[in-house]
Structure formats: structure tokens, C-alpha cells
Length: 130
Image 1 (cartoon, one colour):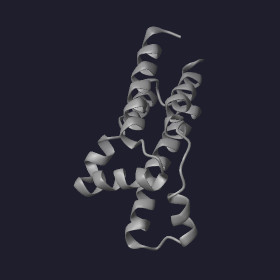
Image 2 (cartoon, helix red, strand yellow):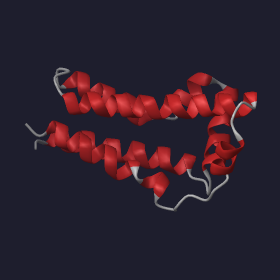
Image 3 (cartoon, rainbow, N blue to C red):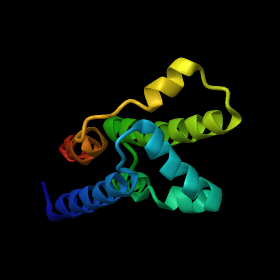
Image 4 (cartoon, rainbow, N blue to C red):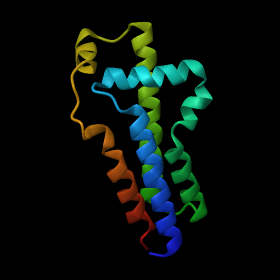
């Protein structure tokens, strides 16, 4: 692994720490409330609050767009953002079931919002190994 890989991974870890920090909350509903606040301020600000997505996209393009695993990481990160936006819209339109609302108010483990700090850099590191 060369120094560029290490710089990219360190930057990715910092981006993931930032994202986990601003989204940290005791329930999924509280996380979605934070996302909704940024969404209502400006959609572009919300997307800027996810710098790791852009960094992984840059890494993918920097290395020639040949990695299936990096493609998967990009899809996972994009799906994460899209799913959260979809849930915010469903909550606001009041079209979620009672069971889903109950799930949103359940406490989540303290480590759960931080799993991305390990998962995405690990997958990216695996993708960068040739």
C-alpha cells in the first residue's frame, strides 16, 4: 500500500467521523430529524454534509474506475443518503405505518452510528489492494 492509499484512507476516516458526529442521536427518528433540518435549510447543504461520498467517488475516478468493490461502496453510500431522504419525506407526509414510527423511536446501540467509520474505510482499503 503506497502513501496515497494511506492519505485517502485517513481522509475517509476523518470524513466518516464527521458524518457520524453530526448524525449521532439516541434513536433513528432523532437522526432523521437532524437530516430533515439540513434538508429544509438547503438540499445542497445536506449533500455537502456527506463528504465521504464525494471522497470515495474521487478515489474511484482517481484509480481509473476499475474497482467493483469501490463501485459497491459508492452505491452503498448513495443508497444510505437516498434512503434517509426517502424516510424524511415519508415522515413529513405522514404515510409511514404505526409500526415504522414505533421502530423510529426505539433506542439504537451507541456503536451503531459509528459503524461506518470502520466499514467504509475497510472496504475501501480492500478495494485499493491489488
